[in-house]
Length: 107
Picture 1: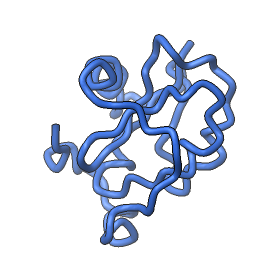
Picture 2 (picture 1 turned 180 degrees about the vertical axis):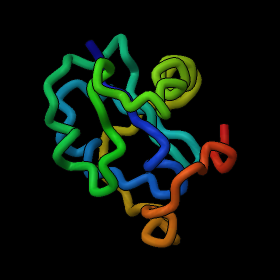
Picture 3 (picture 1 turned 90 degrees about the horizontal axis):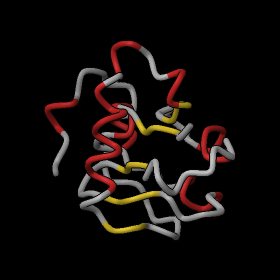
Picture 4 (picture 1 turned 60 degrees about the vertical axis):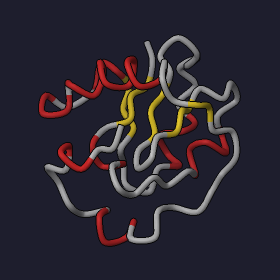
């Protein structure tokens, strides 16, 4: 079972999770991160590191976020790996508490 990055990450892109990943399964898009389900080893380390609580075990993804399971799998094949922590997006703190922002996702 892989872990999944959900909507809370959109327009925030905190990368604390990347720093603790032992297998470099994160992929980086313009304003969102995803987890490659084929690379994820289900270690759970990233979950506690996410300041916006955007990462869930696949079986625990909320009903309203189920589309992100497919989205992580799809985008992880297109985006490049990110293996080191970077600064979050400039307005990440403003977007951290906003919900319903799937329309803001840049592919």
